[in-house]
Image (cartoon, rainbow, N blue to C red; front, side, top):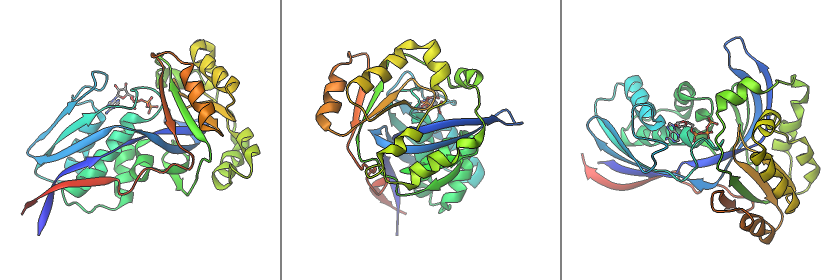
Length: 299
Ligand code: ATP
């Protein structure tokens, strides 16, 4: 019998294929409707079983302190499970921080999934999703990842085999938008449109490209008014031939869906080095299994 000692994970970034802000709730959160979809851009996390909880990070924008979502996820799981040992976390950041790509939430979910294995807790996915929800609304999605239609605060999830039959070019301009600011300035629109994104999630974008007409992001109105550089990215992706160009989350990242790889590459080539570009191939799914055990030690 052996126990895993070291685990590698690749937390992926997500985009929001449509984001509707439906209403402000009495608890000060907002009800939303969105499709979360993981793309081919990821951080790397290494978990090593040890005493205490400690961390190192490759990014000054995500420092290894108690506020880091990786540390918060580990501390929450240890407190909740009563596990008496710990973990050292090594984070290599590739997903732009604060880009509307859910990088911090994906890291937190990966730590929960990885520690469930490393600490032999055998908790069901539902428990991890519930715990993740305490760290942030998007964390629950990343426990299973891939794609999901989400409502509530974003934690009521319907996972499914949703595929995007386009090249996805993701562009993050050198602009930071605070999610809190975006929520303060967005005007919720009543939930008369909720069937739209649900139909997109159930439908086939390859056969029914008209479904893309249903896909809007309500944050674009306040964000574009305040940050014209982000609207400019959307305009440039549209001019380069994108079938859809849309902001992800509360920005600043914008993605374009392209039928041809060449079109996507020439759109990317038009942006200066300050703009981070990444390309996801059609029908992409993150590789399975989601965690890799690197070595075992005798128990
Ligand atoms: P959201 O839309 O959920 O706010 P985002 O994709 O815009 O997320 P993140 O990259 O998740 O932004 O970072 C949001 C904030 O979380 C940042 O201000 C950052 O300081 C903090 N943070 C804490 N831990 C991490 C982490 N591991 N990676 C990235 N950011 C982190």
